[in-house]
Image (cartoon, rainbow, N blue to C red):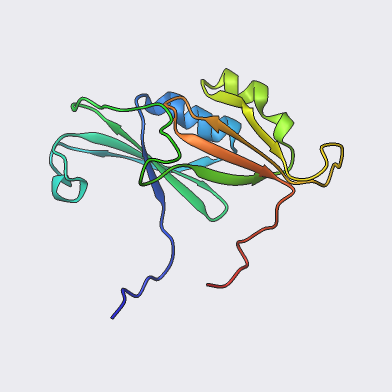
Length: 157
């Protein structure tokens, strides 16, 4: 018997600087903070598969929830955007009204615009053509922005 999923909960992203990442997701992408929790050492070590204290900031925008995780007393590793051919999570993706509006805000908030990833599906001079591009958050998490694409939230599964 399959697990009876009731609905989507959230995406968790480990970050090196909670304040900087919160500013990025709130100022650039329009999220708001729903709550912030401090987890003392080993309080949820079994669930996290990691001992140590951490802070959790839950951000929301519409029906999207992102949990930023910042480890307080544990060394973190990794960072930077990983190859799209590496197994596992590759990117977040958001529909936007206009790709060009975000460039300065992304850079000011510590992210990077990956200008070489801009793609137009169809005629470049067609303002209704779908447009795609990637940027990264301050720790290198890849984020895809999609303009002129259908809203898939009403699709049934």
